[in-house]
Length: 365
Ligand code: GLY
Image (cartoon, rainbow, N blue to C red; front, top):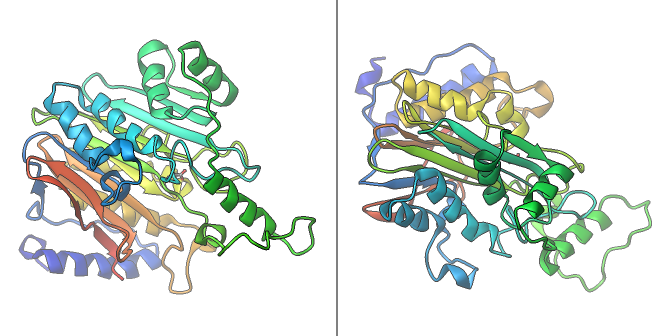
């Protein structure tokens, strides 16, 4: 097949065809031309779906989405990394956004533990925090780690102490809603323990059976070749205390380099760390792949290397991951392992406004 002649539909079909190779764990290079690359119209942001919520639940958003705010900040002259963090704050502050900050779903003991990272692609500097408790805006702490310390990643009690020294206020991040879902999860764990379900507790949340991974990633490009990004999360709901996912791991949940581009990921962090996802995407763009191609290649690496216990009967990974990317020239794209009808789109904002777009799916629905 002459890959340069593929149209977008064929491209997605070709992605599906790679599933067979993925099941067999066959080394595979998915090479096509840059024909499908889309370009940002001026300063722009590419982000996880939740960064452009159609009905923001936080009144403070006043109809703005996180990607809109990030782009406004860049237009006002802020660096991409700072703009991404300001956008992420909107969602960290939203008590109804259950994957980050206030209202994020807690660990197995009912304690919210947050991970976040930032990277400045111009200065090649990064900061991150892991398993941080009681601080609503871990992305801001991550930027402080980058700018105010000689370190890159701080975790747990030390990260909390550092944040408090800088004046961050401690907050109980467990909202009445997230506490209720956690109690439901705990009560349905076993029929042999001493916890009974709340008889008036209402319907069981889907999060009880399928622990969600609601992360926010925002990658920014300032229209002049500067890039930066931020990834922030409460991680896997009901995780073992102390578990840290991919979001604060530079090269997995986030990587930014003005000489190539910026990328990030959301979804099952353990699987992403194993392929150094964001770094892989950026390096693919450095080597000439379009953002869609680079993101698809990362998805395919996960499918190729996924351990047997994490595979479905058809051989495909029984997990999902999304990748988001912007090249140094402002081309953008995204991929997802399994198409998620109605849920897998990613957020984009540029001179044409904020919107959702479809990622390239390795395994279309
Ligand atoms: N991607 C978020 C996490 O695994 O924690």
